[in-house]
Length: 413
Image (cartoon, rainbow, N blue to C red):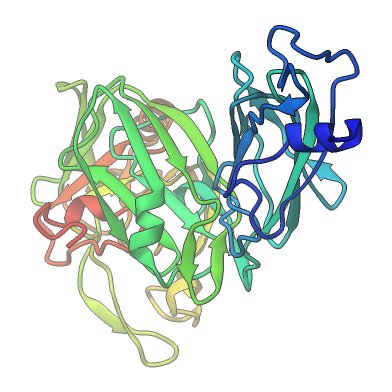
């Protein structure tokens, strides 16, 4: 005859396959269980009827190099889950139990380089409970990379901010990315209204995204980078996920024609202003180190990078350092919209008023009457477009946001 202790042990067995290496169980009969009670695992005559609870763990027991992006799931067959904990290093991973109490799923994130202990308390139909336990470990990266969202290399993108129709999506990784395909796959851009777009790697750390044409006015953009657990190559993994949402405002485009010396300003497709201007005078000279310096305003769509009331501009910033050089200057300039990293601006130039609308005399900037510069400065914002035409030097993609100068067939190719 079986002793009572023997009967209880047999009644709480675990199905084959549920207790793999690294998993343990402990069982005890529900104290209220009686022979032949409805739902009892015991039958008259003293013979136990074994109805084991099968417990499956995901990740499986003793799994290694688990991605912290993976979800933990515990499921029970032939019984229910009373409780579940997933913990490592004194921290517990949050999770939820389905209403039928048969599946527990993690909602919190795992961490890198940790060994997690999973403990599930399950009950069989008689109410007898047992603890099922297993462990797994997450991958330990050589280093991790985070991301930041940029309006350009001079300005961070502001959540909830409003930008011009030329503002491309810029995701900057904190470390060089060896596996660009994996990184690019982790970036998701949602636009409303929806429009197709393409990615463009400016360098090993900077990923851009834009549609074929400028964004439509009023577009809402959300960027999600699902980077946690992503192998970026060379031992670098994504540090975590990030997201941001922002808006595209009215379409504001200033078209600068260096032949007619005019700027025509369009808002939402309608011309609202015409300003006389003076652009780069052209020609070349030699800098202090023998480098060739030209004075052309670059042709192509530029995007506003910064707005500054006053900027100290100096020819020394690009190599002309001798005060006796006729091209030398150092001045405080007002009402400045920066449109390239190399130093092109639209700005007020009261000293050049006789030349505005007549000829190009600047060192590369777009000069304007002070009242016109004030209107442009007050109206335009980051991401708005200044499209320069009819100069012999093209704006390169890296000098500001030059993405719109890359043919769509070549963008991301």
